[in-house]
Amino acid sequence: MEILIIGAGLAGLCCARTLHQAGIPVQILEASDGVGGRVRTDKVEGFLLDRGFQVLQTAYPEARRVLDYPSLNLKPFYPGALVYCDGRLHRVGDPLRQPRHALSTIFSPIGTLADKLRLARLRWRVSQGSLEDLFHRPETSTLKTLKTQGFSDSMIERFFRPFFSGVFFDQELASSSRMFEFVFRMLAEGDTALPTGGIGAIPAQLAESLPEGSIRTNAPVARVEEGKAVLASGGEVLGNKVVLATDGGETARLLGKTNPFVTMSCACLYFAAPKPPVADPILILDGENTGPVTNLAVVSNVARSYAPPGFSLMQATVVGNPELPDPDLENKSREQLTRWFGPEVGGWRLLRIYRLTNALPDQRPPTPDPLSQPVRVNSWLFVCGEYQSLSSIHWAMVSGRRAAEAILQDLRR
Image 1 (cartoon, one colour):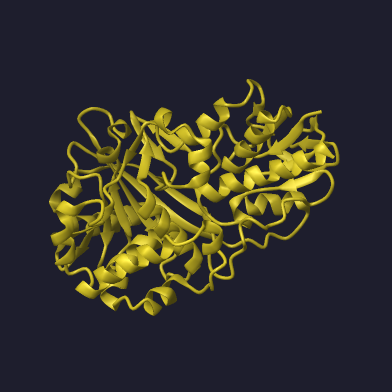
Image 2: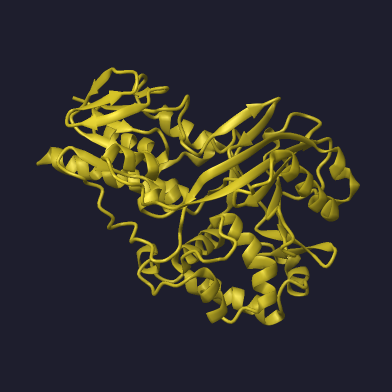
């Protein structure tokens, strides 16, 4: 009998991939109309719209192990950012990877010269030891660890807060120092990139590695029992074991428990225009904390395939879930972006607004050890997903593999 996997997000797909490679038949039941969970891309009028600003850190060890990078045709961002403050954009780059911009970075008003030296020291610190070592270090908040490391208020407010609040969707920088150091290490060791086919190309590649017919979409599950899953339509699908690879709220429902998982939210606005506001494939940060936009990326500068010929695609991220109606959120975002780029923003055409209420798990301390979280509920039921581990493509993939390995251990016995 097949192993049933509920959910075709990254965790469920990686669980299925590991089992399939071991010769174990799998059946994935997915409630929506496609694979990927939150990692999906919509095609709108020739544009590729990722559901929220999502990127692949090419240094993720699990992604390197599992994914075929050449087939994804990854396009990298510039390793750094443009920061808007004092009425203009200032470049902050990685001097080790972009030495031609070292002077402009050193003399930018984003932090002090001592802050730039502390960045080098932080880079060295997070690169020491294994990733497992990193997650056994003492834990505090991101903000506290930055202050402990000696960074000035200017550096924190103008660079770290807008950059990492866009990573964790946490304006207060209350997220775990361990996750901050993990992300900083991944940024230093590899590229931040987009697949040519959109971020949804990642789960699509994983799905293609599975046998035809092993993924069933539009199949929401009402409940699971030993040996089967009962569909909302009333049908039943039999299985030897069941893996819940759904988000935290859905997993709690299927387990008959109250949802204990807190999530972070964001809004994402996509604009189209004949020409981009900047020429580089670089992230642009709100260094003045005037909001509502935390960062903006001209994603078509990174991967040209994101926009049809003759157009550019801009993506603006708003941290949190503003109570403003969509027209008001659009107008306030335009007002802010007009200060950055001038009156041309008035001619940008809004393509879509995504409001992602469950964009990421809350990453405030204490965070779990991602390699020791239990994946077994009982002899026939298993769980995986980043909600019980740590957020990121890497940890979602790892959680799926760990659930599969626990099942293989049972079968070998």
